[in-house]
Image 1: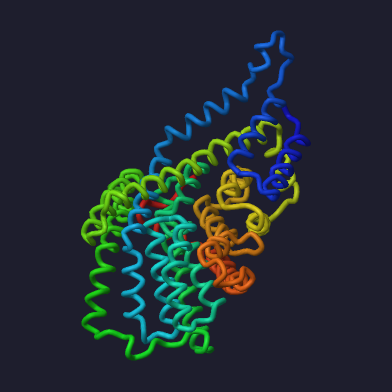
Image 2: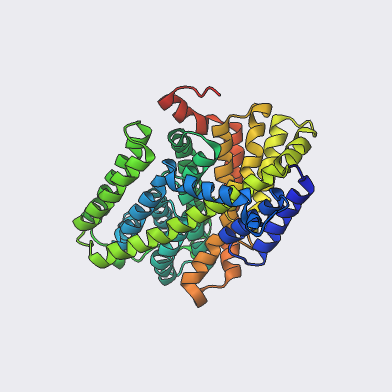
Length: 453
C-alpha cells in the first residue's frame, strides 16, 4: 500500500508530539502501531478479525530482532563497563592527577577535564554519564579556582559529547546495526576524527586561557604537590585504565574479538580495576547493574519503536517520496552531502541522536551509491554532526544534563553561551573531514583493506 501523504503526516505528527514532551520510544511504538493498523487494514468479518492485523506481527518481529542482535549485545556490556568505572571513582582519580600534572598549562583544569572526558568516553560511550560525572567532579574544582562559569560549563558539555564519537561509542554500534556496516571498520574510521576533535577542543581551551588569563587562573604554588608525587599519582590513575581501554579497543581493531566479546572483556576488566583500587563493593555492583539495565532497556525500546515506525513510514511510501525529491534536484555529490548534513543539523535542535539515526538517516542511506559516497565517510560526517544535537540550543541535552547536577550554581543561558564556540569547532571539523576524507578512511583501509561496495 502506498499512501505517501499519510506517511508525511505521520512524520510531522511525530515531530510535534516529541516537541510537546511525549516519551520518544513509546510515541514511536504508538504511532507505528496506529498508522500501521491503517496501512495493513482489511475489513473484519468477525470480532476477532479486528486484532488480526499484520502490524502486531511486525511489532513482535522487531522486538525479537532487537533481542537477538549480536551487534547490540555489546551495548549493555559497554554500559556496565562504563558504570563500574564511574562508580569506583576511577575517573575522579584520573581528573585530579591530570589536573596536577598539567598545572603549568594555561587553563590546566579545562585541559584536564577535556582529557578526562575523552578517556572516560572510551570507557563509557554515554554522553549523559560523562557530562553528569564531570559536572560533579570538574565544575566545583574550576569554580573554586575562580574559572569563568561559561568557560567551565562549555568545557564539560563539549568534552562529554565525545562519548558518541570516540570508540567504543554506543552510537556507532547502533549505526552499524542500522546501516549494516562493519562495526570494526566504523570504530577504526572514528578514531582519528574523535582524537582530532578532542585535540581541537584542547587547543581552543589553551588559546582562550592564554589570551584571557582571567577566565582560567593558574593554581597557586602552595597547592601544587611535589613532582614525584604528581608522577606517582598520574601513573597509578592513568596507566591501569589506559591498559584496559587499549586492550578492549585493540582487540576489536586487531580483529581478535568482536565488539560484544571485547565489551565482555572490558566489563570484567572494569571490575578487576575497581578491585585494584579497593573500590569494588556489592552496592556499587548493584548500582552499576541497575543503571546498565535501565539504559539498555531505553535503547532497546527505542530500537523497537524506531524500526516499527520506519517500516510503516517506508511501507506507506514516505522513503520513496523523499528519495524522488532529492534525486529530482540533480545535485552534485557535495551538494547532496551539504543538504543532508544541514537537515541532520536542524533536526538536532528538537531531537536526540537516537531518533535522528534510526528514523532519518536510513532515508538517505540508499542514495549513497547514486552519488558515489563512501558509506563509512558518510557515517563519520553524521557522527560528527550528531555532536551538534547535544550542543545546539535550545535543546542542547548536554546543557540540561549539566544544569541538572549544578542546579542553581549556574544559569542555563550561561551554559548555552559557553557551548557556542565548541559548536563552531564541530562544524569546522566536519569541513576538515570533507576536505581530507583520509582522516576517517585511512585507518580502516590500512587495517582491513580497501573498502569495496
